[in-house]
Amino acid sequence: MQPKRISSPQNPLAKKVRLAARGEAAGAFLLEGRHLLREALAVGWPLECVLVDEDHWNRWQAALGPMEERVFLCPPALLRRLGTAPSPEGVLALGIRRDRPWPRPGPGDRFLYLDAVQDPVNVGILVRSARAFGVAGAFVGPGTADPFRPTALSRSAGAALHIPLVATDAQDFLGWKSRHCVTLLAAEAGGLATRDLGLAPGPWALAVGNEGRGLSEPIRSAADARVGIPMEAGWDSLNVAAAGSILLYSLAQALNR
Image (cartoon, rainbow, N blue to C red):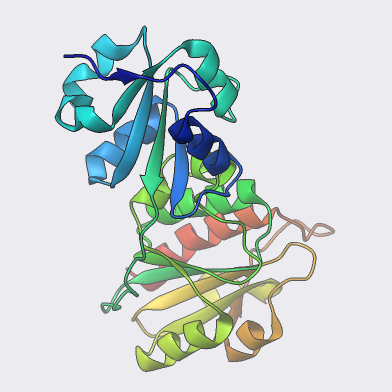
């Protein structure tokens, strides 16, 4: 038995996929391409529907067969029209947004706070690095690009599906920090090198801020220490995604030996 077919952009599901591509679909987000769909299936992420190029059904039948009632075959031209990528690789899906519980820190857990990081490319790279370096959860502060928008999700390589991402404001995040005795480290130019921090072992969170304005005052003021990356004389600038990724790695080495 083959799935049903969608051939018109006026189909209600096709319209919702297009809304998700713009970040405007209530309760849903767009997954584009084979890798993101496989990541979603691997972690059991709930999917509202999957649209498959009618010429590619055979390669997906085994993986998608159990959810065949939510799978729809589409002509290739329609898939290209609905997605944002130059080539959707024969598959688009709608993931269902869900609230993730606030993490409960263990002794060596590490976290990331995104403070008005506006560029979705930077957000995606930071979430990907968070996953790579063992971050137990990331907090999405006000003004930060949605990590489930197509550009950010693609740059994260699906890492956003693997770690808890909690949308919050500074006040609630700082309350969580205090309740759980989490050391807050503010990423700033001129901050201490990670090897010089001298902090006791325990859960910690790295806060990275807006490239233009830096960290917001509530986060900066509440930080237990400020951490930076030593650079060549005469140069003190790194992209926030590069700086955050380097710091996540070096902090993990320095504080969780």
